[in-house]
Image: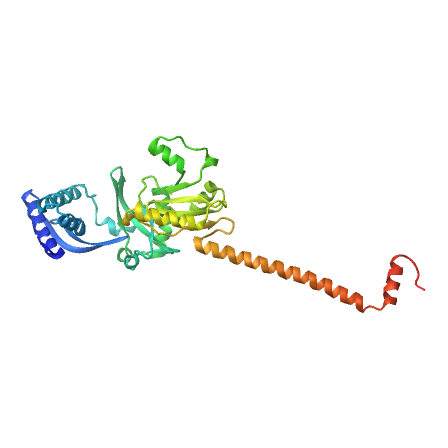
Length: 354
């Protein structure tokens, strides 16, 4: 099997055969899976008479085969993944998925890269925030083993008879209750993970914003109270670094950090430490707490430069106006007959002109 297509075709047959040998009746189909941040070829294994199955990502299995892993081991691994996925899949009442009055209570928010998910966003309701987009999920379950959720699509909304505007309003109300915003100092986070003593609140240099289960936590950016709470922790203006789709980093804009340095850091971390499916963007953002403006860092720098240029022009015009007034007064005095000047001077001293 030298080609990917040959491998995929044989893989599908053998996975189905192995599962049936173990007493599982399944249907196996080949399809293209479009998920946020990634699109891949998959074999979907679905129990007979059920509607929800398990996707086996084919490029990963083919890569292992190409690198020398035995075909039998690959099939055994795929069968194991399929069985676990089927056994642990959440119990979903499909009728509930069409009942918006029930599902709206499970609404959560997520932010993703607009460019990376350009194709996907055509089929889902969303709102743009700079180069990111807010999308919506119905959370089916959330526990220590993880979160099970369904991305809300345009088709779902149409079937439910709900407008994107209503969806957004309900998500803003429900998401903060379902997944409350948490903003912690970086030293607090490290203390929880590694037992390190946290810094005093006034000594924190960076803050982490997410939700309790740390899944799709960057969605807190869209919460109505996020900017105000972040401002309180940062002590004023701040930069936002998109650590991943699961969390945001907040850096106070105290004049000690440069945008270029933050941008370089985000790009390096994304390239070396963040899985492609978890990446948000390579951008850095800024919040102006006085003018209540959230924008890309580069836009903030441009806006500040424009304000400074305008201020300099105003000062120059003011200075020019003062000089013009002085010059005009000087010319007026020069043109005034000396007798008039003497008379005015004499009168101002209480004397009498000769």
